[in-house]
Image 1: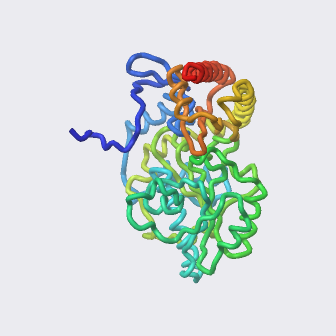
Image 2: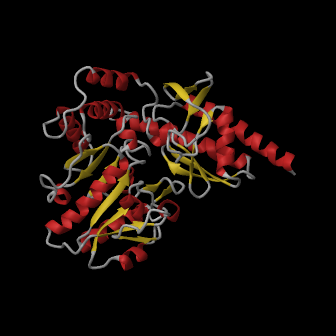
Image 3: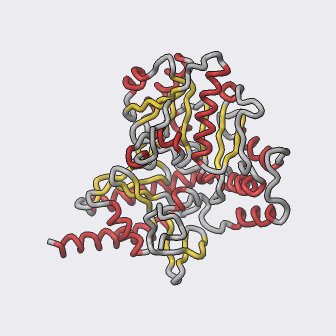
Length: 396
């Protein structure tokens, strides 16, 4: 019999029924330390009291009205995001890929409104992942995701990540924008060099292009800054965020400057569910925590500590690990054995992690973890490494 749930996921045989802080509890009662956070989504951990109370209070008042009417929670969250970022305006979505779609449409609409309707193409980068809609798949241009879905959506020109001469060469009279992740996540946690991002900014300014940052995974404190691009000193014209912005509640946002968004007039874009009162309650509650004094500084401190500890683990097991990479609490271990083997070994010990490209294991823990949680995780990582080494010896 065909599964009732469409079988598009290779799921681990474990189901979680409860969460508390950085921990998840399975049906059988086993406790797991969650260093995947639902793929960088549960920024405040599980069942955070402030987030739970905000959602409970809003759920008792109003869930949905649609964007035919004003939504006060939207207005408040938009003001707070504008005050904390480069942006002048925000469009709320239900997911990261919807935020990306909004960004792409906005860039094309900007050129149209500026009298350059011929400019619709967007330069993207090898290794990128921007989501699973047909347009986002075309932007990412990864064959494994495009296979079987018909002709690729036109409008994207891909170049090697970090290769500025290739970017310059790719610009044509039809180019509208450049779309980049400040840190590529799905391809194996690969940060863009600050000087590369600065060069992209100059090129966009010189050639009348828009610079779009995909911060769906890196945004809202993940790298130790509110947004990852802040460390480079470069600001985009448009930015897509999601994942951590709702603390686990599905939502995203497209942030933009007044210049980039000016042509997005009434009727040019819309969403039925985007920015609904429940999502806005979650987003505002998440910002309450993330923007609190010293929160991001603590993320940086814990992230640096975890990176140092992981470097020690890699040095102690040179047959398993190649290097440590990442920023803040977006860290990865490049493996010399299949990353799936280590992920399975970690889960067996009670630690959850996430796979990535380039044979990397990603660690994306809740931003509320402490150094004590890192030490607990490192003990489990050591046990999993020893178990893998024992398996290698037994197989010889």
